[in-house]
Length: 193
Picture 1 (cartoon, rainbow, N blue to C red):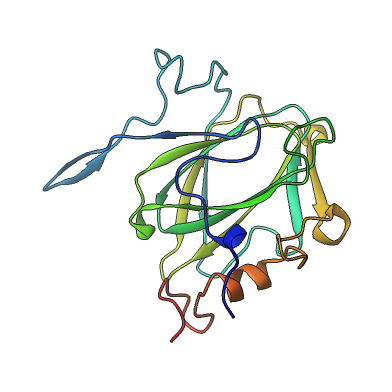
Picture 2 (picture 1 turned 90 degrees about the horizontal axis):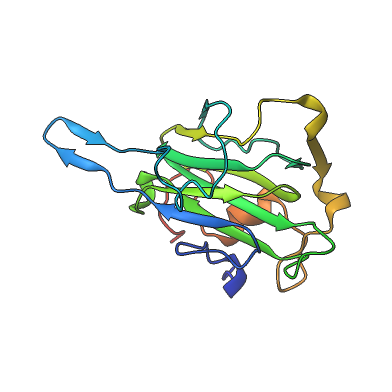
């Protein structure tokens, strides 16, 4: 099955209002890599938002963080950077007053893709979820604008959200796995033969 254009993961920006990206500049040498992820003097690259806590998440290969639910915040901005492995970040604009309302897009994040390290800003009201692909676990850092508050966090079933790909197929991680060309047996990043 061939992926239509809106399944091609985004690598250089976003069509969703308020979603922004900042490419990081890791320093590499024979010992490994070092990257500054967030600094107080980066007015533009921190988007003028405070960083209230830092969380690290480890996700096993083939795992979606919530297989059938979107994650959403009412007031919190998330700033996510993948430091190991490969993730697909799905975003769906569920904000009725947004100029990009009902826009769905996928982003490839992580060094296993061969993509540059980058931070993605996810505004409040934008539904989001991740899928770890490849043979290696993915590790990502989130630097939210607010301290954790369970009352600010929500989950919305995919079926209720109404997110659909451009060809009318409802969003699901199963569809992403199939149409993006991942080999489900071994979770490699190679397209199917």
